[in-house]
Image (cartoon, rainbow, N blue to C red):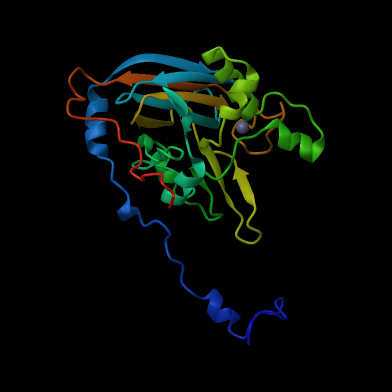
Length: 287
Ligand SMILES: [Zn+2]
């Protein structure tokens, strides 16, 4: 019998079909492994070259040369951040949240990487330290630093409740990029992309599959630290959701700044190291 009729009726073997064990799409062992101990050894000898304090409900850009490091720290109070990354020399190469999720899972931590868009598909930044690694996955299925959310934006707010709110992460990132590159908002906006939700605690409900957020476990002093694999332009928004315990896309949540610090490796420490090459696919697409 085929499924052409009565397709709404579960088949007789429905339970057996549901019981089929899942297969991991992209086993971790197949990925090139970053040498995190080596990166940490460089970091131990690195020296700070700059910092940017991202104001609440706003965003700031920062630049990190290949082989340097950047650290995002919670200061003053619990706050989540929305992070965009571009190749400093080519804005068309940007962070690819969806593929990063497929490769590493829904949330990132030490040893995992932020991957770039096609046709490059190479590591942009590798996480070398995460003080919230202890959190793991809670009983709701929630975890920290997700690549499942998009970025809060004024369009969704307008769709759902007719609002005109201007300090969602999407707008914050757009203004900061326009200011940093001295380009019009209309040119900056299409470059803004889905983010790494730094410090945000999220998951999907098991019963309805809906995206949820809960109060971030982040405390002042917690940080996430990265090794820049290529020359980076970063852009971080201190989300108007604050710790995301109640709502975002408004001015009601308590918000705090986020600190970004950049560190340069010691002279000679990058000898013999190069940025990862762009992806090796020949781009002929069968023609
Ligand atoms: Zn946001």
